[in-house]
Image (cartoon, rainbow, N blue to C red; front, top):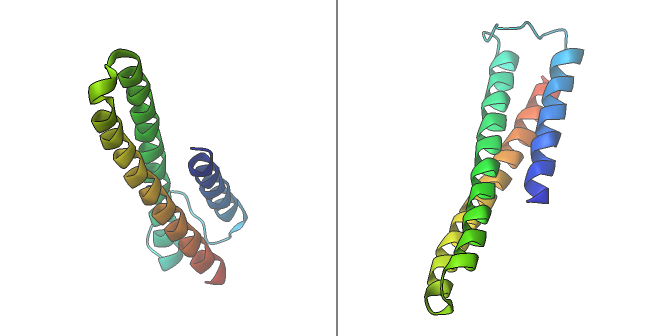
Length: 109
């Protein structure tokens, strides 16, 4: 989970810095290509936060399963939850890479 939150904070900081230091930024205006890229970056940031929060909920659910479930059916339930965490982790990695590419395009343009 540390990598996920690290990429979320990196995405947030780069987005804020791009907004503050760019003369192209006008709050609430999404007409120019640069502003549309900023909007995409903001949407990806929100998606990353949602995926990270849902991963945390899955971890808490796994902990409750470990505390309650007998050892005989434990493996199946834990493997399902583990697969769900892996999907969210991969989503966050993809979102982070897309946000990085968007930031690079914003700096170049």
